[in-house]
Image 1 (tube, helix red, strand yellow):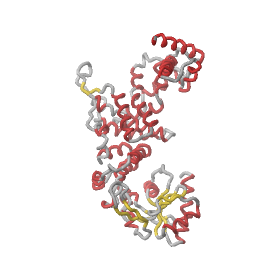
Image 2 (cartoon, rainbow, N blue to C red):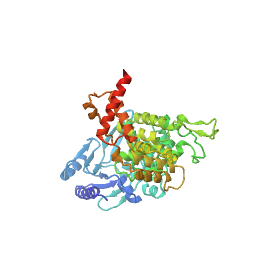
Image 3 (cartoon, rainbow, N blue to C red):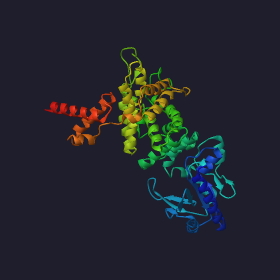
Image 4 (cartoon, rainbow, N blue to C red):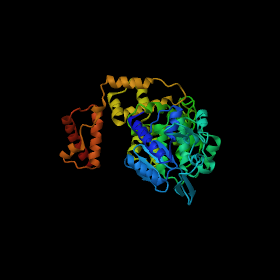
Length: 468
């Protein structure tokens, strides 16, 4: 338990006492109750609570004793104080189309059963009294936790929030639970067209970054028809692969297995964005095969399936899909670069007897090596075999060490500011010169600024003569 969670728990106890003295009752509810009962480590430090028997004004008055309170919508009374999100039971009725077409009002007198029916899944509907620890379970959520099933709380209310179909995908990834048959059908019938792409992307991110079983989440998304509007992803299902290299089957099945391998590698990464970029690169690493796979007509691979050029094709497709999902540009560019480079380690290893220092420097200087190594491992072991050491990665680490290649040595020595002093203004011409200089640096043609400036002058003069 982190310090933030410990502080939130202490605050919750104090608020619960005040609520009780005012005639109400406060429960922990949702993920915090579920994860404790399942013995799961909880990544989210927020605690959800629900208060029965008090009006919104009475609850707000209590909460203000303990600090600054943020209110989300006066009519449905969701309060935020520190890491606590405290709400009242709510009724709702449809007044329009789309995911926002509901009128929601707080109802402190609602029964536990009626209130829980409006939640998403039974495993998230268990109430725990914050003072006594008593469990209130009107919908059988405890039983569903024990049997390991994801079940909708109520068929009549489930589809009121179309995001719940994507939450089913996410919880399949987080908990590893299969989705109950009727619940899966409810998800398939849910109209998700009104959902903003940003909300869908947020659920995909949680699935990839937080889920212990992201491959299962990916599989669930397909079975729930959530990728029906993503033709690039759907086409992975029917894209066959060479059985010698991929006995597990299609590109889709390979991606499912690779994502689950990647979940264990992801935990070694400190930055959440690094984790997300890595997991997206695993998701898209072979998507280019959907447009490049064909049967070889000649040579030693005649009659077998090959996918020439699937790396650049995949990088392009990844950009298209991530743009549709409204991903940040920095994330899109990093993912695209990793997809483009995901065969580079294997290609170097195949040429290990003749590989040059320049080629190794390009590997280090042209991509995010640690993420690329993790992507290589997810790809290599995403074929149903037992995870273990990789001879390719062991060779790569040994070779980089023997060649004394370090990442900090591969930063460009000659920069734009240096060319400005030589009279070269920012322009495509400057970009071409800098690119050629960096290639020369990687090849070992110079290793100091002075040598780099001399070479820059020669390159500039040469390019000017060619232009004339």
